[in-house]
Length: 351
Image (cartoon, rainbow, N blue to C red; front, side, top):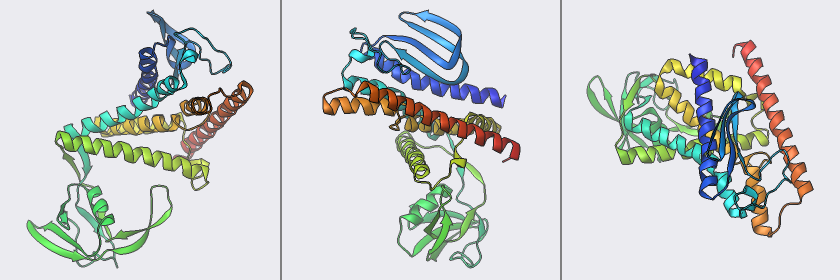
């Protein structure tokens, strides 16, 4: 069941991405010849209007084939009014942005829906107090943090945000044994690990969560702000991670392929619909951001070519475009091989 869920999730995300391209292309009068979910041999095809809608053998991908556009032969063009290549560079950029935008929009809508219907989060309840930390002898296991410097604390993540953005000392309002207590703590600059495994220094008080999960229902406007913040934060996280990989801070052993994505999605099904939706939102943002990278063969690479034409008032040299596109496919192919190799290695090592 988990594997089926994973395939359905990936297929839907791909469908939504291609739907973005499709809608913008049609709005700008471009004929869409093929709308395919998956690559390879076409299993099912149905013609509706001018478009042939297909389901192909390899479900981990998809594409929209527009009139006048052919990634396998970038030099192939059509001057017909309903072709992709007859449109202005700005119009083509809008079409290319459609897919990534729809992925990011989908993530926002998922976050919005979860925030309004009930977001499962870590409660701001203390599980452990580290020895020799600022909180030792002041806070105890089971303490519920209600406020920090008069900022209401609803989730464990709120604690980190307030401490990071507050100057010492901190004034905590806590609930202990049905009593409300006020405690003054001076955070200490301590070394810890960030999400990328790097050593960083942060203001800490030396506590960890109890692991208790609570459900919070947010009002509409608060939900909107939370969804926007989550979408922006995840976008920054993915972009930063990619840049750190380029600079060598993160090794290629962290690259994952479709096997890992399927496994993680499958595992998430054990934790319920909310977990699957949150993972779906993260993967959707990932697809959106990575497709915007200026790598030929990705949407970002095509945007780069069109920006050049828009600014320089001339097209990119065909020979250069073909070479760059081939180079882009080599980069993507290499990353796919690395990701697949890492998937298999993790599978056999049990990690």
